[in-house]
Image 1 (cartoon, rainbow, N blue to C red):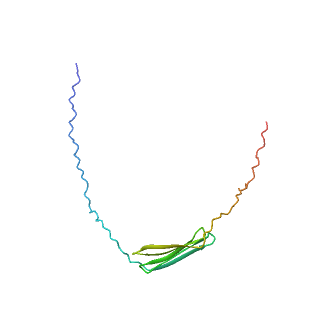
Image 2: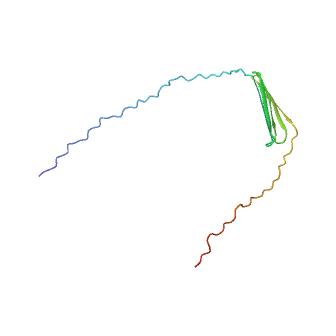
Image 3: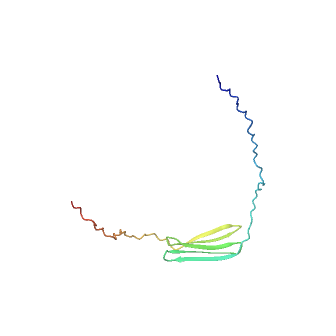
Length: 138
């Protein structure tokens, strides 16, 4: 009688081993900056400028003028306030004293009285459509 041969195959033993981790963080390629603070006095540039805006339609009135000799800045700006007064700010500024302002007002404050307006809804600008079909007949 015939019998199947006994299997002689065996799976090979593993020969591979996972490598040990070898990662090293990179070393910085630069030196950290040294922290230092120096207050510098920049030389000023002399200047002189001014502007003024008057728009009666929108009730705007404001302006600014300023000048400097390179060391001290002086100037003034003004604005028409909603209550009818004019606010005026006169100032000086330099590296020694900083910014100093004096605020004054011209004119009298007037109470606000809004105008009363009556709202009227718009009237329709179209006519109702006329029927295009007649009544059904049986």
